[in-house]
Length: 212
Image 1 (tube, rainbow, N blue to C red):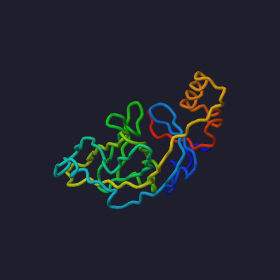
Image 2: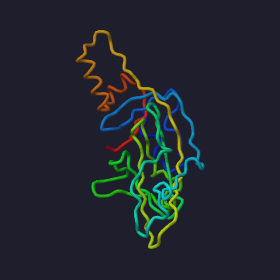
Image 3: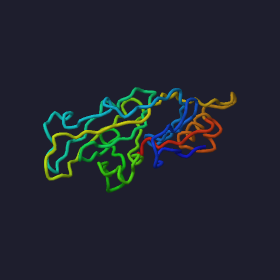
Image 4: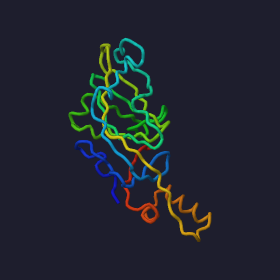
């Protein structure tokens, strides 16, 4: 089994799994298991760029000010899809990521890390900005901070990465299994028990899609 291979490595973004590979995704405090049926790149390009001042329907972001978090429509996907994304600000602002409106990304108990123009100086491939979006209604929201003593007329962010199409894996049980036994196996699969996953799912890549 692979342990989150290539996800946060300090190098160019690359596929975390290939077609017909299995992935085990941690989201909403449990593991779900999928097979990859399709992948494609999401190249750095103008359709994957957002300007947050315009999105907020204002003309500037105030000195030392904040644009409240808002949904990023270009990052919305349907059920059965997953985005594997990195990003960077193109202006001197800081991005604060939320997975869903109320769940911070890159957080600890008392800290919510931000992504700035200087992030790429220590992390040239932006590996530490990596996040995932799993299916419908698991949307990404972005808050913008202006660390400068002057107002700024724009706050652009560039996104890029990969899109995956996933199919849930249904475990095959022996005919003799009772409903109680099946439920016990499903619970172990949700808990990420490695022996159970190896038996009923097979080789997989473990993926921390969300930290909650």
